[in-house]
Length: 294
Image (cartoon, rainbow, N blue to C red; front, top):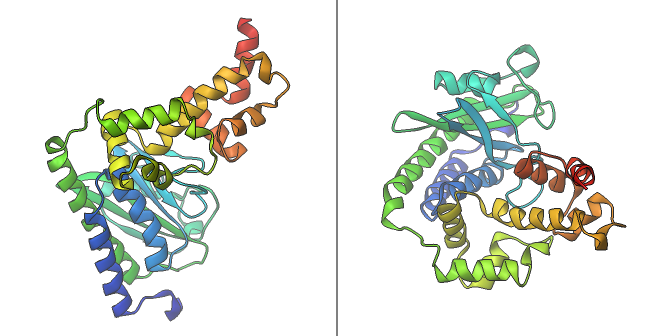
């Protein structure tokens, strides 16, 4: 283990101070989680971070925010996976409620490869009122990379995260959004008439600017009214566009991927992943089903 893997005390203080201040400005749980994954990478010198949330009814963990190779754009997660409670290192930590450092994943039979095999892993639970909310997980290609200092810092971040989630749960009923909200109406109008979703570079920030509101407000509004993330909201319009065009004579000469890119997806992988998530079918399977019906 090289000393270069550790942070100085001053860097630690700055990192924790940043997280504490940053999380207070977040107005939805998704904003909190995406902020953590992004800034764990930049502030703690790591290369990968994924946060899982726990579904207490299904007893499973699902990847809800990520940064690194799992997050090629905006709030999209490549190959989003689900784990049963107790499955893998993440599931084991969720079941025990105790953080773990795995110094060599090749020697741990619980290790599950996600986007790429890595040799060390750090896994920390997020507990809200002593109840499992989720897991912060980070992996590194070097063996024995993570130190007790990394563990301590992620435990502090998990506690800050839990506190902000608790505050958001407390205040959620005090600041309800309505479907009649002028900004939501304008958002739907921009999507339906201006077809903003067809812009492959569309982001939370650019849409918020078009509406004249903050990114935090926009994300919270969509999450509160529809119980989905902003990127899922945009992708629903894109997928509706794809489904219409796959059955249209005007697009008969297009490849399936071209139809997806025309609707605003910026890559084949993003298109296929989102389409399967929202419809349960791949785009090709959906197109074939149209041919069968006709």
